[in-house]
Image (cartoon, rainbow, N blue to C red; front, top):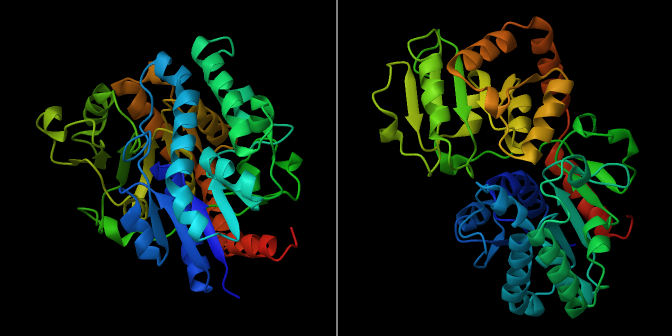
Length: 393
């Protein structure tokens, strides 16, 4: 039976991309799927066969990583503004097109604001490390002190907003609430305290879908190893990293592809060695099929796509969340963490040599790849959503 499944997204590449395969699978099964998106992501949703429900985000076209400590401390206010704006803008559409279930990113608070007064079932999505009674990234890796004025203001405003949606005026309960069902887009073994997550959490593993809209990529030579270097699509403010990377791997045995995003001008990095290609963007999945090493920021999307393709990593985290991911990569012996303050031309080269020269690390990455590929993540996620619709969860 066809059901209406509404996805409420958070407008960031690392949050939207993991949902695409699930949306495609649900459409294939005959469901009506709608997805709240900014204009930037609307073509991606349309290509799945789902219907985009457009809105204007407090983050613009898509989320950018904060640069300063003040911006980081103000993230709670920005997320609240995003949630309030999302709910207000899409409510008229969903009032006329009532969904049977709301599937929402854990940061898309607008989904909870919309669903609560209408008594709609919710399913939470974690494209990052999940949280339960035993583990929370906010507690293990806090982004700001709780007594920071911006944090206090965010909590105060959240508490004042909740009763408008029929929710208790308890912001901490709102932030720590665990829903009846959550889908986690990573393997249980990668999750901190993974054994403590009960049947409310379905670990689907990465739900990777092809991205034909990004084009294709082929290495310049079949005989030379490829290293992909990126700080992620939302990064801004560290062009010196790319300069050091060019010096570290230019005129070496590597074929080097560096993606800098929209905040660094490739032309501003100067003349390039013949083995270095610098672009704003590249089809990451295509590149990883050929890569021997991925040097990146430690975003969960990049971590999962690297492992799914059997590529070891050197991570250079920029945020606390990325640091948590990177520490987990290092703890599991799947790559090496290089702290931002330790990045030099020499340390980049040495880290690359250590990771690619470690046979036991390569074997662990291979095992992780094979485990991930043995699970059909989008089918597992779609099965769980259908079970929730059928009242079995």
